[in-house]
Image 1 (tube, helix red, strand yellow):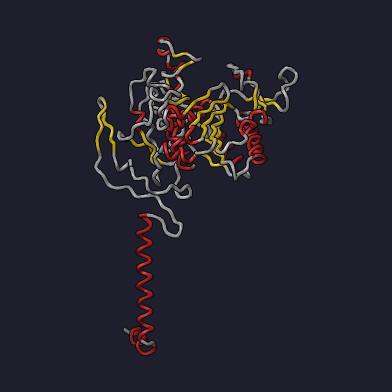
Image 2: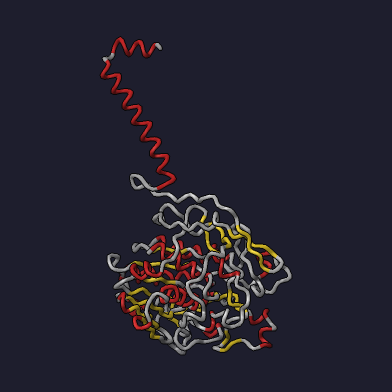
Length: 428
C-alpha cells in the first residue's frame, strides 16, 4: 500500500499504466519461453521432445514376456536432430515389435553370407526388434529416401576392416529397397566395391584398409598374426583412393586385437621384411592414427569433404563379462545386457583414448560415431554360429563347438549395424 501511495503521489497515470503493461509482457514472455522448452525452439535453442504417455503392450515369446512400449519407442520424428543438444551414445535398448527391418538377408542381395544369420539357420528373431533409445532425446528414424537425398550427387565411402564392411552393407541394404532395379548397380572387388544409385547420381563405396595405414597383409591376407607387419608411417598408397570423396567414414580396431605385440615398420619393406620393432598394441595403434590424422589434416578440403570416424566395435568373447557363468562366449545369447554402462573386455579403453587424443588434436573436424557403449550391450547380435569361416558355412561338427567357432566379432544383418547407420543418418 505504501508503494501504491507513493506511486500515485509521484508518478502520473500514463507512467503507472506503462509499468504494469511492461510487467505483464515479461510474464507473458516467460510463460511462452517455458512452453517452448517442451515444444520446439526459440532463439536457436533446440531441445529433445518429451515422450507421450501410452499403454504398455506385452509380447510373449516362449515362456518369457517382453514388453513393447510406445512410451519407450516414440515415433514422432518431427523434431530436428541437434548433436549439440543430444548425446546418442548414452541410453538403453528397448524392445519394440512395431519396428520392422527395412530389409532381410533374403530381400537384400548385397548381404555377405558371413552376416546372413537368418538365411544361415538362426531361428530366433528378437534381436531384430531392439531399438536404441538415447537418454536425452529421440534418435531420428532412418528414412531411405531422405538418406538418398542427403547423398545425392555425392560419393560416400566406408574405409576400414570387415566391421566397416558390415556397416557399409547395412547402409546399402537400408537404401536399396526404394530404388528400382534398373536404377541401381553393384561393382564388387577385393579391395574396392561401389553401389551406385543412378537416379540420385550417388555412390556408396567400401574400401578395404584394415589398419588404415599400409601393411603386408592388406591385399594378400596373412592368416597368422605373427607374420603381419604394419607400416605405421605409410598411408599414401591407400589414401590416394580416398581423394575426391564427399563423405568419408573410417574405422580400424579388430585387426589390432590379435593379443600379440604389433610389429611396426618405418619406410619400405626392406631386407625381407626385417627391421621392424614390436610395440604394445595401443602404441602402434596411436602411431598409425597419427599418420592417418596427418593425411586428413594436410589433404582434406573441409568445404568439399566431411569426415567421420566409427569408434571400436566390441567383441564378446568372455561370457563372464556379463555374468553368464555357464555360457560360451556370445553363443545362444538372445537378449542385450541390461546393466547400465556395461563395459566388457572386448572394448579396450586405451584404444578408445588413443582415438580421442588423436582426433582431439586435429585441425580438420572429425565427427566420431561413438558406437562402442551401445554395441557392448548387444551380446545377442553377433553372427555366432550362423556366419562363415574361410568362405564356407560352418559344418555340423564346427557348430557343435561354439567355444572355438562362434563368431562374436561380426554382426548379423539386419541387426546392430543398422543402428550405427541410423546415427550416421542423423549426423549427415
